[in-house]
Structures are given as structure tokens and as C-alpha cells.
Length: 138
Image (cartoon, rainbow, N blue to C red):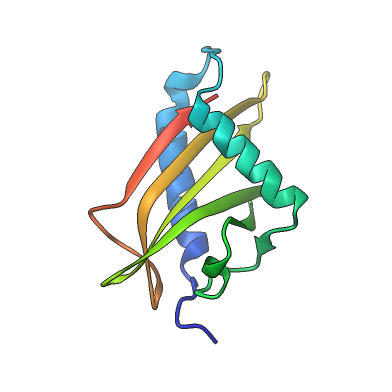
């Protein structure tokens, strides 16, 4: 078994989604064209699903052949998180992830986010001051 497993992934994802829901209120009522980053995320997620690049969990072995996706069900909704890059560092691997979610309501709205420099160590996702979470609204 690889030393890079992520037993904390559901907890981290719940925290990330909670943070996203706190800041998306400004996105309601605004319709804009998708940015190049948003188009990249949509294309990447579609490619991962079409080519069956979904893994059960992130491992050192799965990070050797990117991109990959991790599918999770939270609150009855399925979410696909893409890992599009991974680099070794002295503390573990630094990965970049992205996803989009659909908000259900009168109008279905999509939001996208990306996290860069997420430290992934022997115990899973670890805190790091270099990590950045960016919200991209559709």
C-alpha cells in the first residue's frame, strides 16, 4: 500500500465546499461568459469522465499518470474533483485540484474552484501556507 493515501479527503472536501458556499452569495444574479480557466476545468472534468480516469482515492501511484479524478458523494450529490498536476517537494507532493458544482434552485448555477499547491503527505492532505483556493464563478 502506498504511503500517500488520503483518509482525510472527505473532511477536507466538506470544509472546502462549506467555504465555497459562504462566498458564492455574490455570484447569484450574475451571468458572465466562462473564463479560459473555467473552460479548462469543464473540459478537464469531461475528459476524465469520458476516458474513465476516475480513481477511488489519491495515491502516489495514481499521481504518476495525470489527470485523474476522485468522485465523492456528499449530501446525495456527486462531485468530481480533478487532479491535474503533482510535483514532489521536501514535505510530500504538491498537487493541484479543480472541480465545479451545480447549485440547485430556481436556476441551476455552476461554480468552479481550483486549489493549487495542496500539500499531500504520508497522512493525506496536510495544512500548508502555500496552498491557494480560488473560486471561479460560471
